[in-house]
Amino acid sequence: MLVSLVVGLVVLAGFIPGPHPAASAARIKAQYVHNLSGIRAGLCLFMAGIALIAPWGAAVAAQTDRAGLRTSVFTYVQVVCIAAALMIGVLSCIAWGVAAFRPGDISAATTRSFNDLGWILFIFDWSPLAVWYLAVGLSIFMDPNDRPVFPRWAGWLSVWTAVLSVPGGLTVFFQTGPLAFNGLLALWVPLGVFFVWIVAMTVLTIGAVNRQAGPSGRSAPSAEQLPRAVSHA
Image (cartoon, rainbow, N blue to C red; front, side, top):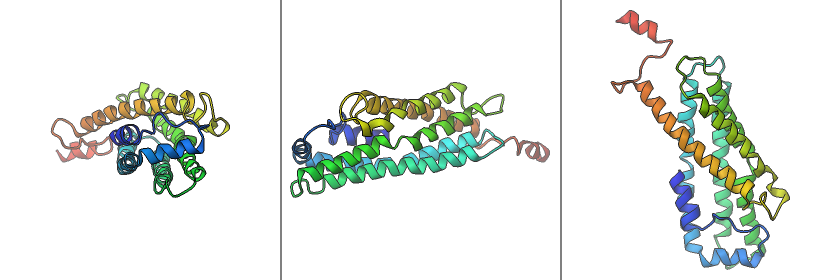
């Protein structure tokens, strides 16, 4: 997923750094017309890769659920927010795809409107992602085991990732400055911490899965299964 995001949106489409929100309609249209093949190829790659957030998020949710919390609410919240995050990526890609479908045949204002829609979908919909981060973080903090599935610092990383995603919710007020959709606080900080969170949780989830499987490569018995396993032996 990360490869598709970087190669698709950065290398091929040239969307990051993003266009200036205050750029003229003619300039936005020219960006699409002059790099039409690259934008289309990049969006196709991004659309293919964004779906991978679903199995990745499910793997994290499965590991936090393995902690044996007294409630499954946080697991359900993660699943719902994963679906929302997937739709945010899909809808932003669709909006950019419409802008790139026939930029030479429609008005520059229409192209800019669809471009704006894609960016606002990509950045402004911060709340489902923030709730997802918080659900993961609280699941980690509430792990009652002596050897928790995830280390406590991963919970703090999740909380701070949620907090730093909030500025994206102000992007509709600004066309210039750090809170515009190409600005430091609205784009670069949330996107940067998202990358850090994804990479860190990937490494930790792989480690948790390997520990769960045990040295034999088969799943080790859970706390509920252990007494039955001992009795059977």
